[in-house]
Length: 296
Image: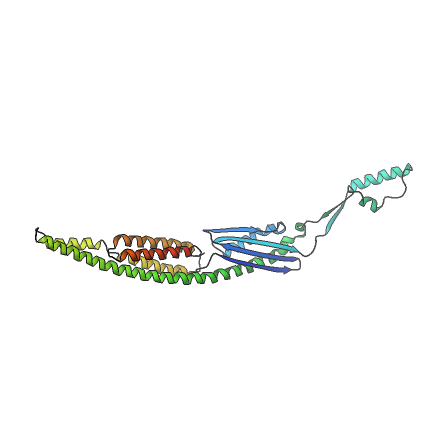
């Protein structure tokens, strides 16, 4: 199936714990180059996200960004420094016995001393945010990939229409080359036979052997095998394009083989129009190669 490697998708998913946003950008690349950006609080989900994307996308540079906005601020964690508080209480009791201070140690006294009480924000990891939001993130990634694939398939249809039109034109050009080459081969054979007849009046020549040699020389310009292989490549193209598997790299290789056949045809075929049509065919294949660089 012909799909474009370029696409974009962006969406958000709400949960009672927070809002998950996913953005995916995809561009051309020879292989699958997957770049992930996740908030530290859900970084442990990276392997799951990577597996989801790799299962659906086979080729291209894909950038996946995940954002997270938690709805509730994490509860603070308050800890009392027992040793410090006990030492402080003992010191105050001793001072009270000496008549240096009066009154009991109050909570306000402890709050004014940073060594007595520490207040820290409880880390989101300790709240199990990644585990709790895992299904939400998975669903958001799946939906974003669905959007991306819809866009890539839609653009792939335009690519296929263009490639099919150029392929049909290329098939017609090869037919023109084959006809011109056949006419050129017959003309070459006729010229050689005519020249042989002219020489036979001067030199003794075995006419049967000469005729066989003329045919053999003319057959060197026969391109029927190359034309047959080229049409086989066109049929293989259709099979690759219809397959559900990514076909971009295979189509690129197939174009190289088609270009090689045309080069051989150009070097073997004889005829006034062959070179002109060969150049036209090579130009069309170059345009197809540029388009294939966008196919997954």
